[in-house]
Length: 67
Image 1: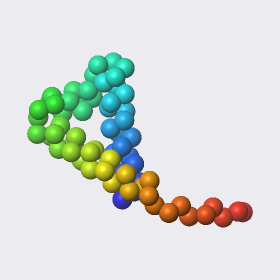
Image 2 (image 1 turned 60 degrees about the horizontal axis):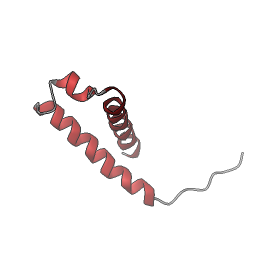
Image 3 (image 1 turned 90 degrees about the vertical axis):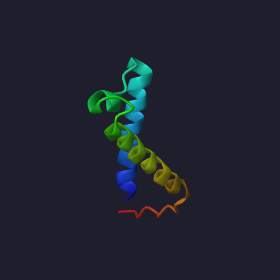
């Protein structure tokens, strides 16, 4: 679940980067505008990934084993 959440956060970050740099919302462009149902579902899934990723800040780190 952690890896899935991180992938969603990366997708969201890339989308926000494209908005900031080029003024293009890739999700809206691909899926028919910001108000389309599929775009809203994708935005919601990405937001849930972001919320899940908050928990990663508080996870205990495992020690790295030396080889």
